[in-house]
Image (tube, rainbow, N blue to C red; front, side):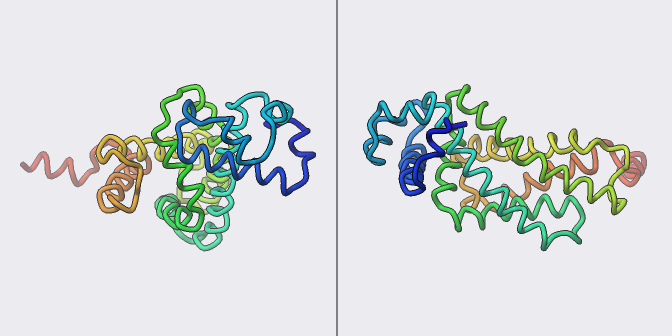
Length: 220
């Protein structure tokens, strides 16, 4: 979290620093990103930077968290349209809504694309921790509603299921990077959707063969 001096800045100056940092982090990895360039583009002295942030990591996590918060707000507003859908369909639709978000907020999408290939484990872990905190309340709310509607077992722990569902996004990003060399959804939409459906099916239906499969196996 930035220092109080950062939040005491006039809105215009604070937003200029945020904009310069977003541009830098959307084009370069954490290690390659330059504090000097951010200071130059935002018109502040490097000494002033350290009055606002402890270090580059603090700025990086803050900028990434802003993008995550905006995405959560976007998803939360979308959920109003999805309340009547089963929980599985809500999660699948939210994933597809991510494409809409990327089109509406290209700078945040660029940050996400750059982050998907981030190699600095300290920076990556710090952002993931913050992202999980942000999405946790949204997912838990969705799960609680599903329990009220009787869709899922009342004994299911919402927090545990929330963590499991959060891991789906990481798995999808890794799948795209390994198979296509890019986290661009639109370029590989059909295969990614199949992979997402497979993951969600495992979570919601389990891996045990159903009665129909067992009967067919015995009949064969």
